[in-house]
Length: 324
Image (cartoon, rainbow, N blue to C red):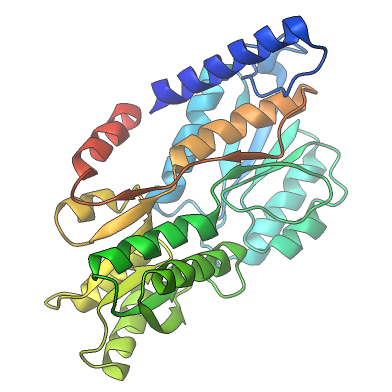
């Protein structure tokens, strides 16, 4: 995957360079080490603040960010709060970074978009979003996926597996979190478009233990009525899978990284991969560009893919190629 990302970045740089020969305008999408230098990358320090660092998903984002730092020659500090509901902890991290005057750019995966907007409102350095965007006037770029579109694709997949009808429940993440709400909307759109009925939805705070309790409660409330459960994350999906073991209920995760092995062994039916390693890599590359004064796009999307029994082996090989 790392080689693929580097190839994409280098191809982008070559295209921009060729365009610059015939035009005075360019998009500035090339990596920092492939474009005309506006400063030494080794002098650039980038802060990356994630939603947490307690899951394989966020570990993958971290791995991508750290690999980009190694490849591009900049300094990167990655941190995150103790959980995805530790709102004040993340705000304190943001304020500490912005008050330190030690960083040239900041990348943020906000837990609470409105609070993040206020926290970065007076930032004197470029601010970028990864995984989840937020409505700050000074936000330079968003590197991530459309969570609604990705969840919709997952919902359509589950509806297809159920033959175009069936009852499905949704296990969401943290209430009022933009990512969770977008995924709820996407799951619902995809399932209903595929002919399924959404029986119910429960929040889990993105924690596997709460997912177990929520799923057990839903099974008691809807005995023998649930055909599938779609989940906010792979961690939540594993909690759901624990609750439904011994039944025919299909379980779909979201994230891809920690869901791949459970898909291979049949614990999960599928997971929606949204490219967290690629997000981590690209957010650092784009933050470096911004710190060096280069023009960058406002959105760098990653494409989701459904991982199931048909392609999980190839996906696991891809994961091994960068984790090693």
